[in-house]
Amino acid sequence: MRDSKLKRFCMVFLVGLICFILVGQTGISYAGTHKELKLVMSTYIPASYKDIHPWQQGFVDYVNKHGKGIVQIDFYHSSTLLKLREAIPGLQAGTADIILHQDSAIQGTYPIFGVTELPFIYDNYDDYVMDCRIGSPLFNLINKELKKKNMFMIANAPNPFEHIWTLKPVRKPEDMKGLKLRCSGRIESLTLKALGTAPVSMPSAEVFMAMKRGTVDGLMSYPGTVGGRRLDDVVKYCTLGNFGAYTTPIFTTRDRWDSWPQDVKDVMIEAGKEYNFRNGLNGKIYHLETYFPRFNRKIEMIKLTKEETAAFKKATKPVYDTWLKQVDKKVGEKALAIIQNR
Image (cartoon, rainbow, N blue to C red; front, top):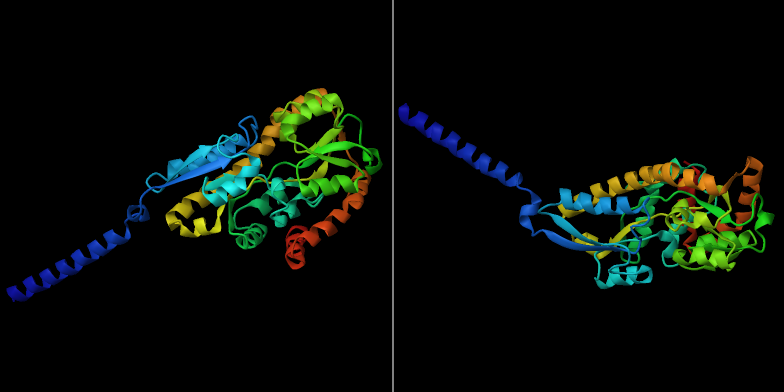
C-alpha cells in the first residue's frame, strides 16, 4: 500500500515537474531568442518644426524605452545622415533601416499617397486622422500598393490642412490667376495649375527671401512651414481651406520588415500608434495654441463661405481625374471610396 502511494506521489511529482518546465519555457520572452536589434533611423525634417519633431522623437523614445533587450534605434534628424532626396535611396541601400518622410516629396514614385493630398477631399480633420491610423482600410490599401515596390509603412500621421498664404487677398479662384506660389509636391502643383497659378518648387528655407525679393507671391502650405520658417513676417493674407494635405509616414523596406522578429514588430506598431495619435492630436493643438495666435496678430486670416469654398472645389475637380491616371484606376477608385463613402 505504502509502495503504491509512493509510486503515485512520484508520478504526480514528475508530471508536475514536466508541466512546470513546459510552462516556464513558454513564458520566456521572445527577446531571449535573439540579440537586441540595433537600427538606424533618419529624417531630413528639422527640429525647428516644433509641431512634428517632438512626435518623431517620441516614436524613437517609445521604441527605445519599451524595446530594451529587443530593439533600439539610433536616430538622425535634420538631414544629419540623409537629405531629402537621399532618403529613399539611403533606405534601400541600407544606410538607414527606417526613415521618416513627407508623402508630398515621394508622390511621384508612390502615387497612391496622392489620395489624401487631393484638394477638399476631407471636410474635417478628424476623418483624415482616422484614415492615417494603423490598420485602417486606407492604411492597409496603401501598404498593399507599397509592397509592389518593396516598401512598408510602419506608421503614418497627418499634418494639418494646407492653406494659401499670399501678399494679396484671395477669396475666389480668379484671385489666384497669374500668381507664383511655392508648393512641395505633384498634387499641390496640379491644384495650383487648376487655379491658374504658376507653381514654384523650392526648399522651404528659401521661401522667406524669395517673397521679400518678389520671386514668389506666396505659398501653398500647412501652417507648420509658415510658423517654423517665420514666414508670417512676410505673408500678408491667408486663405483658409483644405487646399491639400500631406502626411509624414515612417518607412522601412518590406523585406526588412518581414525579417524582423515578431516582438520587434510589436514594439514598432505600438510606437506607431502613439506617433499617429500624438502627431495628429498634439500637432493640431500646437498650431492652434502657438502658431495661430501669432498669425492672427500679423496676417489677415480669410475664412471662405460655403459658396466660395464650392467655387474652389469646382475649379480643382480636374486634379482628381489626373491623379486617377497616375495610379491603377481600380486602386484609385477604391481609395476614393474609402474616404468619400465613410
